[in-house]
Length: 229
Image 1 (cartoon, rainbow, N blue to C red):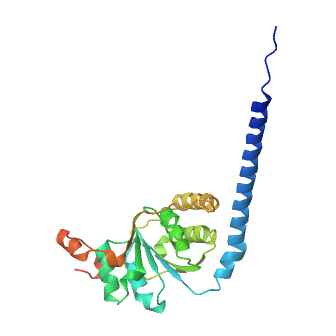
Image 2: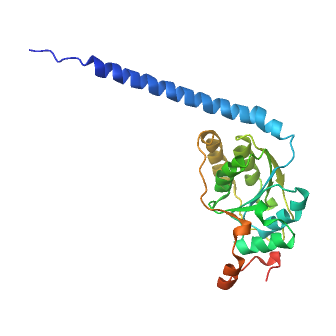
Image 3: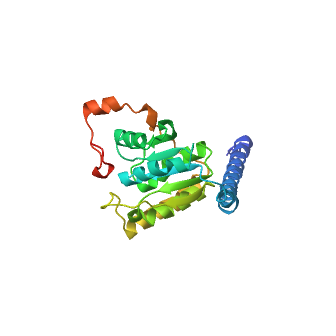
């Protein structure tokens, strides 16, 4: 009987592919580890000593947006990102009321949870070159929002300062231990993955581009605490 021929070329090619894959995966894991380590132990602590150069407002209560508009003058020129907040015209009228330049304010509309607030906002802040961000949310939204802010922002080298405005009534966010545990777990995983992946949000609107007349024609309602009628 004839012995089957051994295709040395295929064997060598297969071994080469396996080695290349192992080399790639080893390099990728090493890069992720070094990037995460550098952000947490060197870059974020260094940025913590710098002034605030970005403001992130987590949606859920118009009081947060009112607070952002109130303190905007304390941070001249600093961009403000509102993650899935109140309706566009409500935000527009609020910031006009406080004399804030509309081109400083951006509306991120991709997020639908606290986890995705940071998932989509962090790449935007990184793209702006933000080093230290003030995160505005409500006391009722803690500690989950603070945990997620520190995990997702610090892991990308952005220092965090929480700002909790006074609330009237009960904001839309509800907290539970199970929800906090789930989001913290997801954020820890994402802190690793985000070193190599940054999901874009295709729905980011500059406040100056909001068509107030169009909104007035179709009608809109704002939270009563905004005092907008």
